[in-house]
Length: 130
Image 1: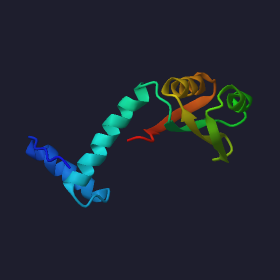
Image 2: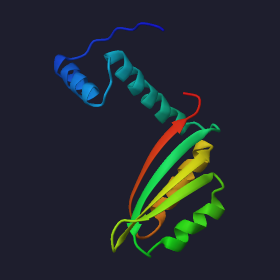
Image 3: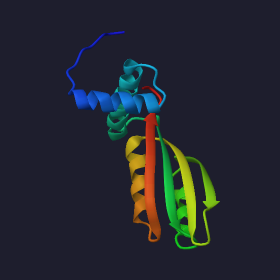
């Protein structure tokens, strides 16, 4: 592995050490490698390459956009699976796991955000070659 050095403000380094330790990293190097992977992963998401994987978490009003969400399976073959959960009397949670080209996965995420009744959309993305 290549060794690098960098300058960091003391307060930032203290905060980084606290957060890294709380998250379970045993060394600064381990935490920094993970942070670098995340930066690279975000860039890969922007590239139109095959093999991106995305988990999309959707919170929506119960019974409101249900049919539109189910139609996404037919429109986006990239969706590998999904999980549906009733949170309470008025909210549902849908989790999609999809794999494919970045542009198509971005289109899926955009399409979900456009559905009326959607309260929140979060996503986690990665690529197999990082």
